[in-house]
Image 1 (cartoon, rainbow, N blue to C red):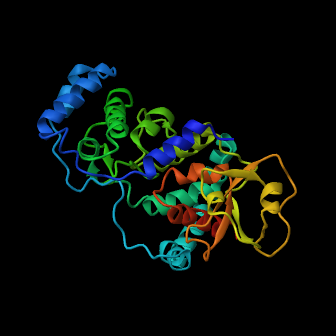
Image 2: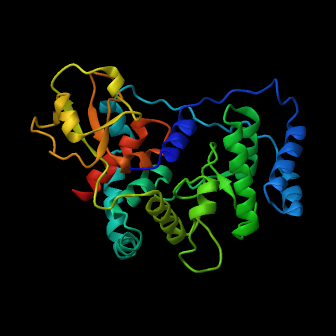
Image 3: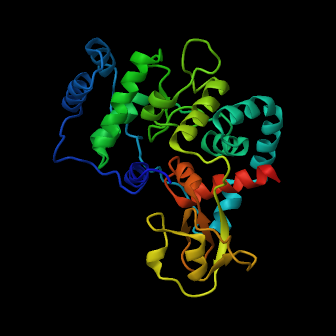
Length: 322
């Protein structure tokens, strides 16, 4: 099972809201000095901290959960998030890069279809690797939000990327929520898991497909990806369920879910095994779709703020293999 600390980070990151912390931080320039002090105390070279802090400006578009016009149900959302052009592109890309992805899959024990699905959904196959100044985005998010401690840590990690990974500040581009590169990984993730796969002496997850894919695969592998398993399955209940059973906080074995009346989507019994605990989710409520999801799903979910978004990734992964 995935360590509890990983799950807590997921919920901490995705379930909070961004609000202005006016009571504690009145002046952004003063706040930057605080960030500088924290970065130096965390081991960042003083000259690097001072030089990069001086270039930062408040970034008003910084947003933990960018607002989108998201349909209310998966029936509407999935076709919009994963249109047929995305499916056909993913299949074509998988064939085009088959040799490279097969090598990565063998090295890191992560199935190619999941790497391709994450690439397609997170950055539209590398077309949207981030275009905003990363340090300004992260500093602004720390200044503005409830997630101050989280974003201070990510800001410091970004400075360490500059110092330790030979990445220039100009190259350190992010989305409006601070995620970076073709796989939209956070700075702390890049600092820990990034791989110079093309052997050019630097990490470039923005422009190097080799670095981007290897970094993602390395992260999933080290976090506990189970190559012999998948993400989950759609199921259906045969009796009324206690709402407290739903969500990513409660898990049971297949045998226990069977006792609660959960069956495969076609009505057949669940696997009769008690060696793994899985979660039951119903993103659209009791009248919508039900899924049993596994540990791999939790790792995919760290990239997305909603279950709908993560299910779009799993849907694409299923369409790729068909």
